[in-house]
Amino acid sequence: MTHSLRRYLIARAGAAAIIAALSAAPALAQESPVVATVNGQEITEADLKLAESELGPQFAQMPEDQRRAAALSAVIDVRLFAAEAEEAGLNNDEEFKRRAEFLRQRALHSAYIDEKVVKPITEEEVRARYDTEVAKIPQQEEVRARHILVENEQEAKDIIKQLDEGGNFEAIAKEKSKDGAAAQGGDLGYFTADAMVPEFGTAAFAMEPGTYSKEPVKTQFGWHVIKVEDKRMQQPPAFEQVQEQIRSLVIRDKYMESLASVRQNAELEIPNAELKTAVDGLLRQQLGQAEPAAAAEQPAAATGEPAKTE
Image (cartoon, rainbow, N blue to C red):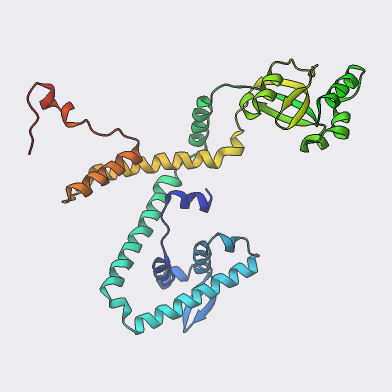
C-alpha cells in the first residue's frame, strides 16, 4: 500500500505528533542506529524515516542524500525548538495540552486503521473486488481504426482512388494525413462510438474489419478516409493497471465498516438537536444509507393516528 493511498483515508498526525514521536523512549531509540545527537539527545534512523514521511510529496522527488539531509535538519529544528518551548513552560499551557492530546488521538486513529484495516487486506480480496467492479462495466463494442485527414473532399476522393488501385493505407497516411496520428500510419487504436465526433463514429462502426470508406467522411476537422482494422467488445483494464485504485475502494469499505461498528457501540450524546441531525446525516451519507422515514411515514401515522406536534 502506498503512503499516498494511506493518506487518502487516514488523517496525518501533524507537527505536534512528530515532536512526541521524536521524543520516544530510549528503549525504542536503541533499536535504530544513531545518526546524530543534539544537546545530548540521540536522533536515529527511525526518527529520520518518520520525518521524511511528514516532509511532503515534493521532498520525495529529491535525491536520497538531499532527502536525508532535509529530514535530519527538520528533526534538529524540532528538537531545538521543542526544548526551547519546554524551557518557556509552553508545554504546561492548557491549549497546548488539548492540541497535543487531540493529535495523539489522531495518531492512534491512524495506527489502528493501518494495523486493523489496511494491513489485513489480502490480494485475494482486492482481486475479488476487481472482478466485481469489472462486472459492472457496461458491455460496449469498440473498433480499432486508422484514418487519413485532409483539408478538402477532392483530396479525400483522390486518396480513395489511390487505395482502390492498391495503395498502402499506412504509407499514404504517413505522407498525406494532417492528423497527429499520421506518424503511426493513422492508427487511432481502439475506441467506442461516443469517443469520436458523431459523423466519424457512425461511419467507422458501420464498416466491417478490413474495409475502408468508399466515400469521404466530413467532420468539423476536415475530410477523412477511414479504415477499420478490428471490432471487439471493450476490454476492461488489466488488474495490474488499476489494482491500487481497487485497493483504495476495499480500504474505504473496510474503514466504513469499522466506523459503523465503533459508532454503533459508542455511547454518544449530542445535546444540540440541529448539530446531532447534521452529524447523523453525515454518517449516513458516508455509509451510503438512506435518510430516515419522514414523520408522515412513522408507525403512528401509519395506524391512522394524527402525528403529534409540539
